[in-house]
View (tube, rainbow, N blue to C red):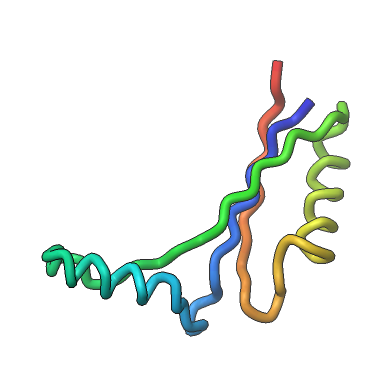
Length: 83
């Protein structure tokens, strides 16, 4: 069994309206020291398999087909074997 974490971020240069809204709200609440906010999505999967390479290959496929949009997203995959 593997625990897989996929972190999905917007590519550099893509507007992040959620981050801008959070920044404005923080500044409005008096947190003027905050100058930028970036948001990202974290997806955790538990995958039952014994072959780490196969798990990585399948998660890459999931990212290409569903979890990310290659036009606007970058992503990182972390795979950890569970005992």
